[in-house]
Length: 590
Ligand SMILES: [Zn+2]
Ligand SMILES: [Zn+2]
Image (cartoon, rainbow, N blue to C red; front, side, top):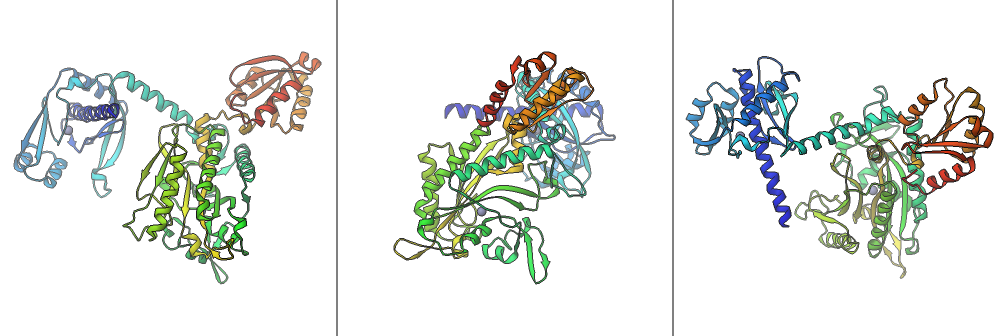
């Protein structure tokens, strides 16, 4: 606990340093543009910014000069001095600063302070460092310039915002810059293009990815993996339609409450249809298609279900935020007493899948609960909420899972466990969820005949195992930086003949591996061998098999791994055994 407090204080101090640096930047800008009009200059996550109204546009070339001026000011050891002023004094001080005058009008008399550092005066509540010497002169860097409307409203003038990065030391700044470089390199949109995995077409529509042959290989492997694993664990895998009658969603209660994220209704003959935003009610109809006995419970229905949700165009991000996605979805219909066991098994499956995909880092669980006072947002049934929250908490506690509780995060029909994961850039997101639902069965009159012959109402557990395939692919692309494990690699082997006369043997090798279901290509282009190796390396192909006279004669291959490792004269049978084993185990190593 003490350690955490210390870290908190360090973080606070860093924010003070960052904000103080924004004053110094403002002063540096004023030294170049004496007539500058100042907006505001807060600290942000990685540094600071300040908004300026300037006679000309700032270019990236201007930044080094401003940085130099800032360093000069920092080294001169300016002291920040606070003064309290009246509204009238503030108006006088900032009479040439229209934006500050506007801010002053919103302040409360008796509560107005200014800070002086050298000749620079700013309207500010603070806090600041005592002296500019506390700002590491080599721990900051002016990053970029962007346009920003005054007070965020497009009715106001557009100001120029200069962003600065600021850290406690040069080492910390350099680490941050290196991480940003790596994040850029790993961006799934960039790798998706470089490795030809998916594309977007304006004509098809925004947020609707098209998977290429290679991207489809990855997707198909993921889908096979999850379907096989779920069937092994007692799920009934089904197909249900992507469209549904609007009445289905009126019954479930999704329409009209969630209609902002649904697509408009299509009128077809006498019916009103819509693209489905979720699969649950489809699965309920399968369950309700005939009478069920307690012996059939838990009834686990699963589907790779296409779903359609409206996302604002500004929020669409590669495969992470799309308008049509495929969820590895399931609904487990069971007795309330079976819930603990079922949820445990769901978490087992999720943890197993995440470990196979190597997505274990930074995972934690959020127990997302309702807000009993909000009867509009959450279905009113205190006893049911108590029971369900207790079930989820009990599961997490017994598993000794790393979890925290959050209120007002539940679904309207019950509490849930959100599995939070950090992406490569360190941003935490909900990737999988397990939800406890005591409302759906009521709305759809789901029932089962119990041991004693009585009709009873089951509960439903909604869950995803590997989440939305598109989003999981985005995670995997960034996690592996495109160098997928062999079982997911679109091309697993490239055979490279040393010269034209070795193409025939290369084709033989290719045919033999193909017969064993290995994804293999022969590069028979007329380029030089080294060029072909380079090409395969860039495409992150795990194995390159280089073959020439000696190999053709002996029935061997020279194996070159994407990691750079090499093995010469490996008998074909040995290579085949090795790669099949790696694929079969879904191993991360080659
Ligand atoms: Zn300030
Ligand atoms: Zn559902």
